[in-house]
Image 1 (spheres, one colour):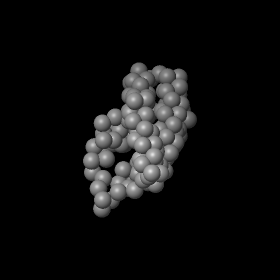
Image 2: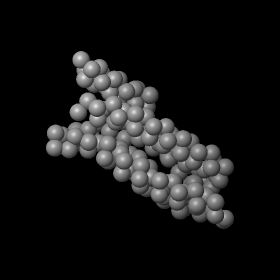
Image 3: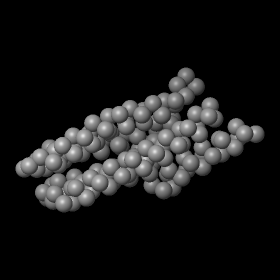
Image 4: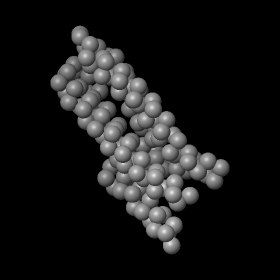
Length: 141
């Protein structure tokens, strides 16, 4: 009986991630690639994303701190980060990345700084939510 309750909790948490706009259909496509041979595939891909994303975020921080600001470089690094975010279906992160890129295009430093804080916040929030979800999900396997 406890297994069924954990499965329901995992499904509820997963649905919440979609309903609250944190994830999009790309996450479903990752789940389709998961099978009995590799039951933790999605979790492994997400962990890789968070390992790689730390490097992207650090590169953006360093570039934002340099003067004069290199908006082309900022846009390029954020474009890479956005692509990485898209690959796991990180919908809110991707949205904030797009906004950051718009500010880069017009050379709006204040907008870039403000939006970068939002990018980091959405990134951290999604990480916490996915870690909780995977804890429950793994207990169901």
